[in-house]
Length: 247
Image (cartoon, rainbow, N blue to C red; front, side, top):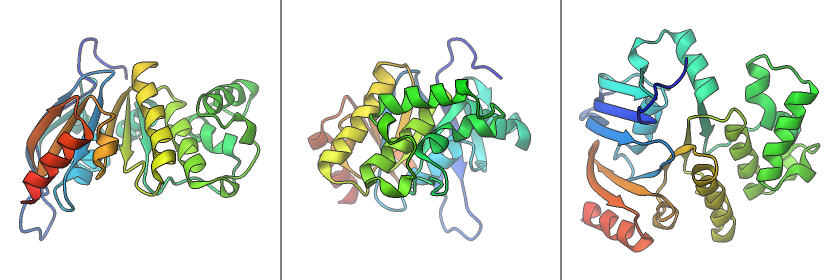
C-alpha cells in the first residue's frame, strides 16, 4: 500500500474523539494537513487532546468522527490487519517510554521492525541496522544491551528503530521529556535531520517550547481544538502562545 503522489503526509478532516463517560470530547473537529518533509510540533496543557491527536493520527485509536488520511490512504477503510501493516511499513514511532527490549542488543532493537516484517536476521538486515545506528552515533554500541546506555543514548536507539523502515512519517511522543537540555538538543537535531536530509515527516507531541522551536510549525490545542498555529516558531513565541491558552 503506497502513498498517493501529491498527497500530504497526513490529513485530518473534522476529527473528533469522545471517550465513554467523558464530559467533553478529547478532540473536537480537528482539521489538520501536514505536508511531506515537514516537522510539526503539537503542544497544549494536560488534557488538551494532544496525545489523543497523535494516537488517532497514527491509527492507534479510531476517531468517533471525521477522517484520518495517511499519504492519501483513509485509515477508516482499513481492516485491522491492513492497518497493522501500514503502521509497520510506513510509520515510525518514538514513544516516551521507548519500549526497548532489554533482552535484545542495541542492533536487534533497531532491526526489530524489519524482523517483525519477516526480513530475517541476515547480513542485509544487520548492515541496514548498522547504517542507521551510525547515523545516530551508536554503531560502536550495537552489541550491547540497551540497559547499559544512558537515557539519551536509549532515546537515540528508539529514533534509529523508527528510521530503519524509512517511514513516510514519524510520530514522537515527548521524545525529550526525560532528558537534560544538552542531551535533548542532540535528540531534536536527529529529528530535524530526519526531515531535512531524508525527507521524513515528523509529528512531535511536546510540552517544551524549546523543543517546539526546532519545528517548521507548531500548533497549540485547548479543549480538543487547535487554537493557535505558529509558522517557524521561536521558543519565546511558543511560550507566549501557551501562556495565552493557560490564562
